[in-house]
Structures are given as C-alpha cells and as structure tokens.
Length: 378
Image (tube, rainbow, N blue to C red; front, side, top):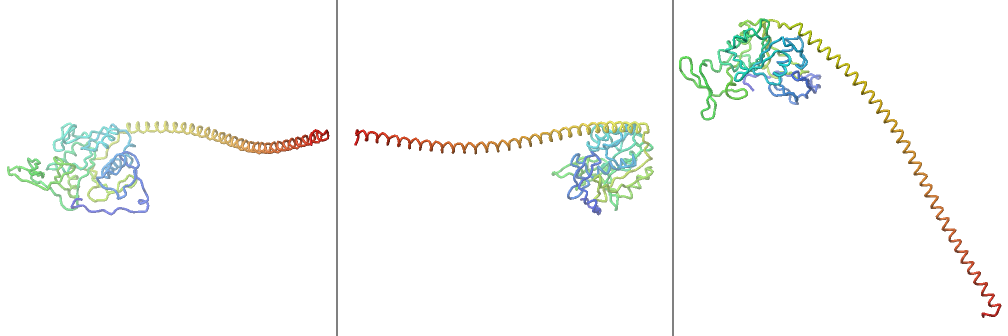
C-alpha cells in the first residue's frame, strides 16, 4: 500500500451484499464477486482477468461517448472515431480496435509513442486518448507530456487518465533529472543522474511498477495541482470519476485511484456511421429473433414428439408389464395344476399297485386250495 493511501468506506447495503455476481464491462461475461472484495489492480474477472481500474476506464469511456455505461462488447462499431492507447493491456486494446479506429502504442516497441516527442502527424489526430498509469513514469517536465496529449487531440477530443494522486503535495522524486540511467551496483537498483550543470547524483529506494527500467516511478501527483495543470493547458473541463458501479464490479476501495476525464470539447459521434451501426444491430436483432422463434418452434416440436413417444413407450411398457404379470400368474397356476396332477398320479399308481398285490395274493390262495382239494399237496 502507498504511504499516502486513504481507505475509503465501502457501501455495504443489503442489496450490494446480496449481489453475488457482477457483469464485467470489458468482456461482457458474468463472474462471482471476490469474497474479500475488489482490489484496484488485481484481476477479478474470471474470464478476462480485468481489474477495477480497467473496468472503471471503460465505463468512463462509455459514459463520455454515449452518455450511458454499457459493456465494451456492446459498443457500436464506429471506425470514424480515432483513439490512441498508451500501453493498454491487450485484452482491452483488441476489443477497442474492433469498435474504433484505435491504435495501442508503446514506449519501447512499435507502434511507438513518445509523449514528450510526438510525431507531427499525430497533432490534432485523435478523438480520445487512454493513458492509464503512464504519466507518473514520464521524465520531467511532465507538463510537456500533458501539453502534448492536449495537442494530439482533436478540438473535440477527450483524455482518459489514471495516475497516483493524493491530497497533500506534488512530489517529484528526481526534480533535476537530465541525463540518467538505472544501474544495479551490488544488486540493488539505483538511478544515476547527471544534472545540467554536470554534477552527478544517485538515488536509491526506487519504486518500480511492473518491473525495473523505464517503469520507475518519477512522481506522485497532488489532486488539486493535477486538475489545475489540465485546466491551464487548455482542457475545458475535468472530472474525477469516483462513482461505484456495482453491477459492473467497479467498487473503489481507495481514494487515489479514480479515473479522470479531461475534455477539449464534446466528441462528435459520426451520425451516419452510428446510424449504420444501429440498423446493422437492428437487422441482427431481427435475425436472431427470427432464428430464436424457429429454434423455439423446432424445440417445442421436438419436446412434443418426444413427450408423445415417451407417453406411448410408457403405455406399452405398462401393457407389457401387465402381460408379464398375467403370464406369471398363469405359470404359477400351471405349476400348481401340474403339482396336483403329479400327486394324483402317484396316488393312482399306489392304488393300482395295492390292487395288483391283493389280486396276486387272492390268486395264489385259490391255487393252493385247489391243489389241496385234489390231494396233491398237504
């Protein structure tokens, strides 16, 4: 945390606490809210990893261009509006390039933009410039950098800006910077500067943002002085966008990180292009509506057919189950009948055998008596 940071109270209404998700206005996707709240720089969108700072900048751009905050994927395509980014993250730069005539630039690689020495062809060229966490790294005099940003804007252009600022004093870390370099004697980085008079000075305890080298922090801004500087350069109005937008996951936990918009004038939206984009969107909406109706009709028919098939199959299964139960009962009856027949057959067989045995005894006794009567046997 910076030494001059001031914690800002978070709004904790029942509605906000109950809202478990937010829509990222950078990519348009929905994400769960972080359990510990939002951090200015940490990625909190589960899909594009955007931070509160980046979402706040896109919300401010939408508000200034269209008068309403809408997600970046829903911006109309307006190639008649030209924008310049200063080392914007690719996830934002790619989407902005789809919507506008937009170029993302870098200090150390192409397409290169040196805010202290802009190309003559850049003057009066851009409708908007996005400069997020850049101007605190620009070598002095930073006033020249801001004046150049004013000059590259069209008469109706606007500057979208984030820098570290506080309510105390403007702090130039290296006020006499002239010819300098970063060295690391003993492994610790230091800034070595040769003043205009030839004397040399060395600074340690450097603050880097994102890595060593050109990312060394040159200054902190004072809020009042920063707004006064922008006004003195010629911007007709400046505004600090401190509002929270809970539905888009924009909740400022600190008081120094708000985005700032500085206007030269009111950006003129190309009406014909906007109308074309509107009618294209209307055409797509009608097409999608017709496609939805077709798919919904097909789906309803599909559901109806399968529900009917299911009902018929259910009835057939129930009929087969009834037939199976009847067959089981008939088999049980046949088994019982067969068992009865077996028992009856066994009883008949025993009865016949008993009669045969009795007949044999009777016959045997008859012959014995006959022989005795004939005197043939005793």
